[in-house]
Image (cartoon, rainbow, N blue to C red):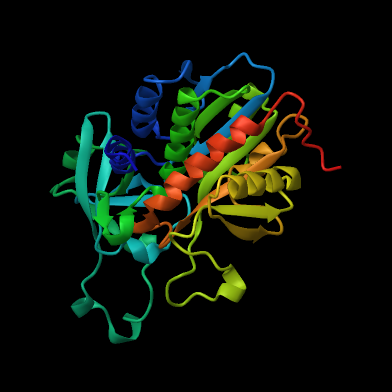
Length: 355
């Protein structure tokens, strides 16, 4: 990966942007897109859309959501301690002992998550997992009014962490789910801007995927674009670490290439086309089964309007929904190259019906 692209990726990962509050990473994404795309816009839902050849007959949509899981301030007690709710799906044990960054109208506020010390927990309760209702955020205030001068109810936050380089081209960070997908679709568009396809290609950094019970930004942006075909880029669980059974969760490894999903919410035509392109370009890939829904933006896109033939490419990811998610950059590069090669194969005559 080029150093400039890696710098962009780390900037995206370090920017706080939980669901519904993605503006900061979205601005970084748009600024980069403006350096090579024909058009860049943001809609009222917070989805960012960059395009090349926007007026061409066939329309290809690449979607990666730019939001992450987070927290929200829900209550302040008389001593100034903050209680919080979750945005998206959390293992509450992850919160214990963490630092947080709360985004406010006056800037970022740092805090620490507090819990009763082990010395003071009754012996019978020491093996019981913490719940978010047992925890609080301490920003150093002495009173409720002091806290409320700095934060408001409803302010969002994320765990305080920064991206780390690991051996073998591995990267560790929070928000890899799924800022990495937003990054991949932008990198694919950059490749296509250098060697243009016949089709219009729209790269979309979608909003609100982590709370997308009604389709989130993926559904609304797909409705606006009305694509001929769509590819979603997300993460999937790498199963190459202890305490996971491949026979239950699949055999997915870091460094073995992006993962192509097969399943009821994924177009079989698009899957076969992606696999064929990968093999022709000598891009290694892995395959995962998705017998019902996929738990990604693909579920919303494939039922948009009259239906959109949709594929799903995932980046293997260890320790998902934690501050220490891990991916291998070679998989990320290969995913972008596969997307670009796929877009070049799409023509106005391409038939995506499962005949």
